[in-house]
Structure formats: C-alpha cells, structure tokens
Image 1 (spheres, rainbow, N blue to C red):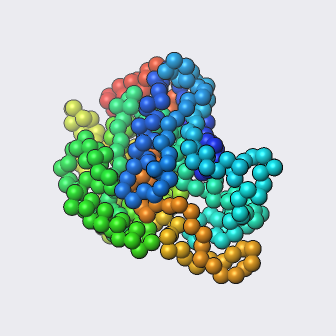
Image 2 (cartoon, rainbow, N blue to C red; image 1 turned 90 degrees about the vertical axis):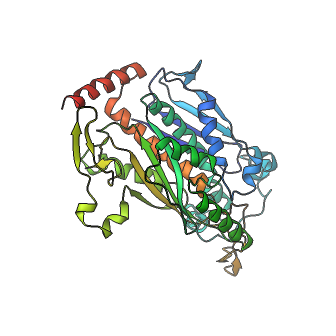
Image 3 (cartoon, rainbow, N blue to C red; image 1 turned 30 degrees about the vertical axis):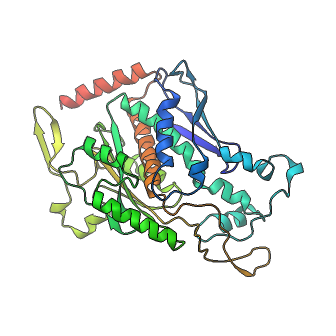
Length: 387
C-alpha cells in the first residue's frame, strides 16, 4: 500500500524521497518530520558531519495547507556540505577531474564490490550513494508513518540495549512512557544510567584508539491492533517484512522479534505466550515473548524488534586494503566518520519498523481518505470485540 524511493548522494545538493500511498486529509507539517530528523543527528560518538548539517525537510508535493492530498509526497533535505563540494560532485561534464579518484576501498564498505559491479574506476561514485546519509530520507518517511499511526493511538520508542559489549538492564516494571522519556533524554539512548556512563567511556576509548563500536537497539511499538499481516503466504507475514526493511539499513547485521535467538535456549513452556480473556481487554497474552506476533500476524500486544548494528566501517586507524589503480597494498582511505552511531541508528530502525506497520495498517484498513480508513478501523475493532 505504501512505497517509497530515495535519491541523492552524501555530498550532492539534496537527498530526496517520494512516498506513495498516503490517504488524503492526514495533517502533516514540516515539524512532524523535522523532529525525527533532529533525533537522527544526535547521540554520543557522532562525527564532524553532524556539526555541519542541520537537517530540515522541504515538502515539495502531496501536501496542501497542512493536509495530504492523496497524491505522492515529495520530501527533500538539503546537504549544507554541498557548498564545499560543488564542482567535485557536479553533474556537468566540464567539472570532471575536480577531485582525485578514490581507488583505495575501505573494508566493510560497498566501495570495492560496488565499483566492480558498476565498473567504476573512481569509487567516489559508489561511496556517495552507499553512504548512511541516505537514511535521512528513511527517517523522514518513517516520521510520516508515525504521524499516520498516531491518528490511531499507536506510539513507539527506541532504546539502546547493548553498545560495545556494555548491556543495559531495563526494569521489568518500567512503564512505556517512562522508558520512552529516559531513552530520549539520554545521549546514548540508554535507560540504564550506570550502563550509559560505561557506554560513553567505551566510545571515548574507541575514539582514542582510532576504532569504532556497534551495538543493539530495541524498538517497541504499542497500540498496534491485532490482525496486521497474514499467515497465508510467506511474503505477507509481517515479521519478515520488518526484518527486510531493518536489514536494509547500512551496517545492520541482524534482526530478532521478541525473544528472538533466546528461543533456542529455552523449552517451549518458557517461549510461548498463554492466552487470556476478560471483559475489559478481551483476548490478550499473559506474557509477550513473541514480541507482538503469532503466525506472521500482530497479536495486539506490544511489538518488540531488536536489531544489531556493526561498528562503523571507516576507522581512523585504517585497515589494510589494495589500491585498485596499482594493485599495491595500502591502508584504506578515510572519509570523515563517527566513532559510534548506534543511538542515531536506533532512530533509523524505529523509522523502518513504523513504515512497515503503517504499510500493513493501510493494507488492512486502507481507503483513499483518513475518514474512510477510520471507518474501516472502527468497524474491525467492533468485530474483534464481539469474537
């Protein structure tokens, strides 16, 4: 129901997204998107690029007087660093040669594979598009999805549960709103203050060593209705669709839902969620080990998705590589980089999950206007309540 494309390079003039499938009459402003763009730029351990950019979206199409029209939405964010790169990244042929070719691929990046695949002798043509700068627009699209889901009381949060081997301990009785508030107040997006201090120290040490750190983020979404997704075909199940989008984020290496890989260590009695019923809540689960899904369908419980980000590939103590122009060994080239981007990457993962949930929501309750979707949604809730 929802689909989008992004376009643009890291040091080009702009990055852009076109999002199709939104209903009409959804209230949407630049501020709804800019809030999440600012969240993406924060976090302890970020590099120099974040001191240059202050991302602000321009809505170029699909919104009139603060409401969506039902037409494709066009979003654009300017790259302020373009001022320093103009001729070096120009589309015009007369500027060719304004910047020396990149011929020393960086381990862990798309540089070498991309150059070989697309026959680029200058890896600048690869790394500019493969850059995580592109995730600016994924966050923008996720912010639109958040705005849509908020109309139906769906809320989300993301927090860091592991950074460089330092693990966060989250009290089991911590309310969703408190967990959300603590995560947003932390520069490492960690709700455990003792662990947060250790995470900052680990980032400082990695920076001093010219190294980088990865970690694990957890996205939680509450208020998701039962019935999104389907069991009837593999590609209609919602968890793999979420995993597909999250794994598409640069540097992400794994996704788990609910207990995830912990299921391998436990007997079935400690994995599955018993079903209960009462007059007030209707059907619900005693626990939520499944992370809000059974049979590829949402259960109505909180959606819980964890994702692993590897350490940033660009190191200030570069790893060994080979110059493709001479085939001689060299140390890899160094682009400006972060020491740790896990807190910011969590915002991108949250955006990916929200997009998938919004897509499934429209698939289930879809209509051309927000009013039509609301009618479908409320009729379905009445059906479920009477089951």
